[in-house]
Amino acid sequence: MSHTSPAHGALEIHLVPCLADNYAYLIRDPGSSAVGIVDPSEAAPVEAALAAHGLRLTHILNTHHHFDHTGGNLELKAKWGAEVVGPAADRERIPGIDRALGEGDTWDFGTATARIFDIPGHTKGHIAFWFEQAQAVFTGDTLFALGCGRMFEGTADQMWASLSKLASLPDATRIYCGHEYTQSNARFALSVEPDNAALQAYAKEVDSLRAAGQPTIPATMGRERAANPFLRATEAGIAARLGLAGAGPVAVFAETRLRKDNF
Ligand code: ZN
Ligand code: FE
Image 1 (spheres, rainbow, N blue to C red):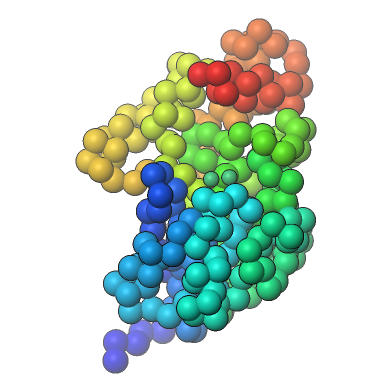
Image 2: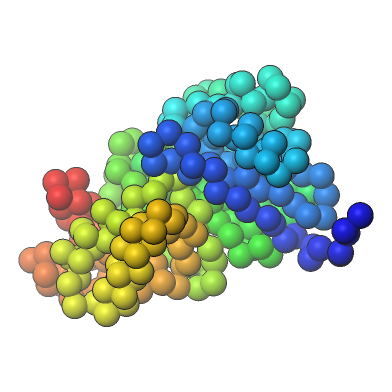
């Protein structure tokens, strides 16, 4: 027995690389037997991670319906009887969903509590799980480190509103996103804001992490606000560089997203 008393609401979080560049996240509440997997692309790497840590899966958390975030749902649910939790706005597209959540909901995971945000734009129904006490947010394919998701099912207005919600979280919030895209995102970000010193330093750090085969996740909100061009559409310097001096943030964001699509 090596039981110390864990902080109420603390979370242990392990990265589980899936497919080519996805991350699922194995989460455990040290104060209970709750064990979850966020966005399981596939079952096999999740099973390996559970075995490596000696854990039994109780919950499956989905940020959105895409197959690379839900592909492992049914196999894992069948094996463990885990409860599947996902976005209410897309409940018909989440395999095996048991519990549908949306804006303003709170969801208890052992002794931890997640606050739910609706963050549409990448898909119609997309949620974020914010564990305030653990200072962690799971952002799926809406907010990436130094980037944001493509707008497959939404508008620039929606995506900007979704990103702005996330950007209002405290600086120390750790961001766990759906993909390891940070290095290519950094190249694009530098094309938008080449003189941003915070971005330059961040990009260098990302290059050395990737050269060493290390993940760049989690990111942190304070640093994203300082360096991620998709959170910085209110910056006059970015608007000017995009030929949109005086334009509002949605227009600047939309142009930034369009340039990234063609980068
Ligand atoms: Zn996606
Ligand atoms: Fe994805």
